[in-house]
Image: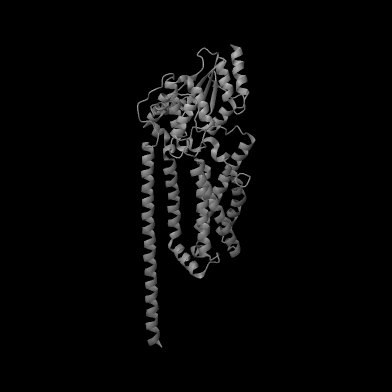
Length: 205
Length: 254
């Protein structure tokens, strides 16, 4: 009975978890960015831990595309997602247009997160753990939001597409795609940074 | 009425069962495909981790550790007179952008201090940013080239060192080619016979060894600058002046 009334409890909960993780990571990164701005010498060296060396991620132009640290975007947007997730978790049926708008904005955010991930991997040549947490959490939240929006038919999609997608979601295709996606991320990081991640062992051997 | 209702109910029941069966089959298909994909990816990750931790990486030391002549076992490539009153040690990686900024600010000053005999500079070329030159191991290639110059043409070390930083590539790029590094050496009047040995990579194991020792001894990043063995942290590394003042104060204290 309880399950039938709110079948998406676990999905909303996962969304809450992901958005809170993203918010925490954004806060840490924002504080770092402020420290860096206060004391430019703080990160003006290259750390031995090569993967997160040089403060490269934090001082690159990609780190503040819009003229302020990217992490501020997380501080502005993630609280809204936290509120959506809490509302959904307590059984509120949110207006269709509101959820659709959230989907659009969050999709843009996801695109931005992956652009940054790509830049960090291939242009900056460095990764930071908190940035990775943002990437993973954003991905997870996007999948949960999409799942809910498809189930609730919030996206104003053509009927054929809507029914195909809702069948896919009912069968759990989205969960498989999310897990595969996250594993692909892990694989990409290991392939690109494996040598550096396991550097001490590599130098000894 | 019952005669027509019964077959209709039976047909509906059949359709419902067929639909349920179809649904269950599709669900199983998704589950098994998903399981296969996940297992495949996990296997790929395991293989990648195993090969990374085996260390078949690009420039990881494999040969015997040979130190260049005119360099010490703990990684010092010395420049200047042995009897100079003050010793300035500089730990750097040729790909480290902040080392480039340090050199731009203080390179000429250090050269002046060396020339006037007031200081001896001990260069510690490290290679820990190899992963950030898109697979070309720029840090190891350049550090090896410096060691080769220290081995064969020690009086050209400082000129070559400065030349490398003048053309420092950005992190995340492939860096300079071996040919470009050789050209910089020739411009610094390193004899051809020495330049031709860059490609032997003779000192790559030594570089890996001294890099490890430097970090084991407590150096945590680059650039690290020591004046007479103690960390120079009293002033800005990236403007000319503070370091020179510290060196001159130390020289005066002698």
